[in-house]
Image 1 (cartoon, rainbow, N blue to C red):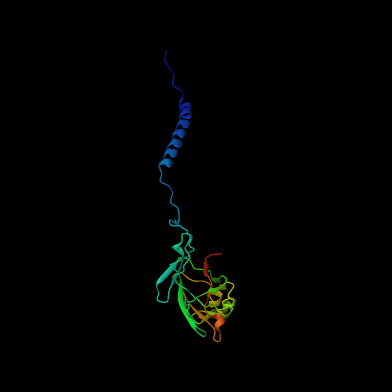
Image 2: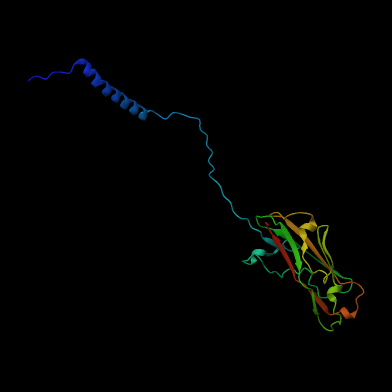
Length: 215
């Protein structure tokens, strides 16, 4: 038995979907293989972005520039130094005599000191040999003048030197920059006119330098 072929019009109707399907597939394939369409672009990449804290270190030197003490001599950055006697350490003063001691404080850290103060402790007197004078107000008689350059930081008796002094305010500045040095001079005077009641006595007073950075 022979098989009849479909009429030409039917063959055309059957072939059209096949052709369309093939065309669509070819188009999808062609688009998939096409390069990306170019566009305007801009870019900034910041590769180094760091932050860290600075250091504040105080260094004390004598009048010849020899470094005597640094705050880092203590692990807490708060050292106790007794090498430089700010009041001179002379125990043979006579009435009318002045003893002057010069030192300097330097900021050897990396941060600026936004505050800088000198704070005294209580002045006390004690015996210094025999005979010992009977006076009990030696701290009120002994005077002190502290200067930095031409600026007076303090002037008065040792007993009146009882509260901290804002050094930056006295100097008319707002900070001590890294590597900056601030000079100081301490002049202690035993006033003229004192009699035997003040012989054989000595005074002592601790002093503390404080600085800070930040707020």
